[in-house]
Length: 281
Image (cartoon, rainbow, N blue to C red; front, top):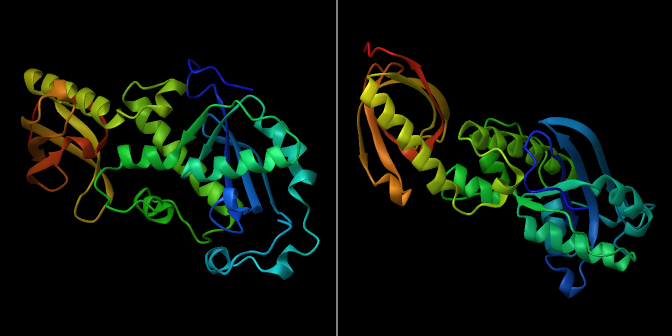
């Protein structure tokens, strides 16, 4: 069921999965008590699936404190085995996506094994790992915090389908950032050097704009309030780490939004484009 790593991001199908569970580890006997799944292609939702699951064991007090799933809510819910075939068919040919993928994939592997299914061979993308690389400097990366920064509403937390929908929206944002920097293949989703790679591409474009005296448009993640804004910059200098190291430097220039000179960290530029041939602060 593996999807080719060389597929364009827009041509692949993704299945975003989120589990609510009775505890933290399937190795300790914990089970899934709710699943949410969202199938995507090209940023569009193709199919959704969500249901409570009879875990055939109690929900731990710690898990209940997080997800609020009570024994009464689970009365009459199907077992995982009863929903496994539907999920398996949804998984076919997709890249699996989750926020903190090791957690959700460990439960998926465990539940499928208990239901008599083979180990899945799908590629897996971890939206949490992508968030840490593409939204640097947030400090904390719970899903709700990253969603707030991205401007994604998150009214219901720790319910599987709602969480999967938020992850789907975040993943679409992340794919847009990658595509804006010419990282366009499924294989790019699993890279651990995205920060360095994207910094090098941004610095190259800024240096080119400086040489040709061009204005640039940037989508910028502000370090002060973690808000994302669109800005037009007349660049005057690019300083800091060398492009060959991929570390972050600074763009210095006249910001037409702030109407003054500002410094912008290269690694906080989410998108960047040349927009004119003349500087006109």
